[in-house]
Length: 173
Image 1 (cartoon, rainbow, N blue to C red):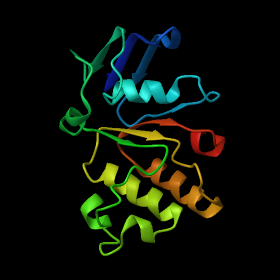
Image 2 (image 1 turned 45 degrees about the vertical axis):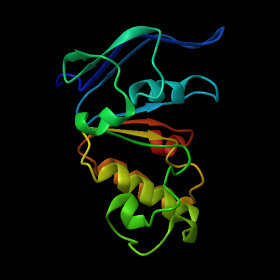
Image 3 (image 1 turned 135 degrees about the vertical axis):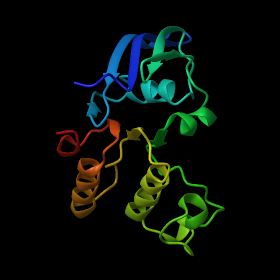
Image 4 (image 1 turned 180 degrees about the vertical axis):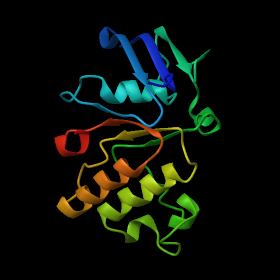
């Protein structure tokens, strides 16, 4: 197997007295799809927030493409080739869809679209940078069977590494 694109070692996050993450180790290799599963409150989204710079851990290290780096700030993600979707859709409601992703649905505003289309726009926005690592936080949430099949096919077709948090086992498997 190739060298990991992302390595986390000994990552720990505490909020007040609550241990959200304790001694987490993770490797993600180029082209690999890794699913994180677990009950609500298990720390899956917190781990994504660490990787994407929204939470700074109290312990641990992160390596990107074999080089130890400081945990990134959110604005540094694109430079490293890391893209992320959120549990919701994370779109800027005052912008048109073209302003959100520079692709399809150019004249529509997010408020005009059904939720499954919002999910597609959110995913397109993440993919437009051609990421090396794509973080998908519950991408199947709120999708019907047809949109779920579409999502699985998209994930299978990606050449980048994918780390996803999901409750739908069809997507993880």
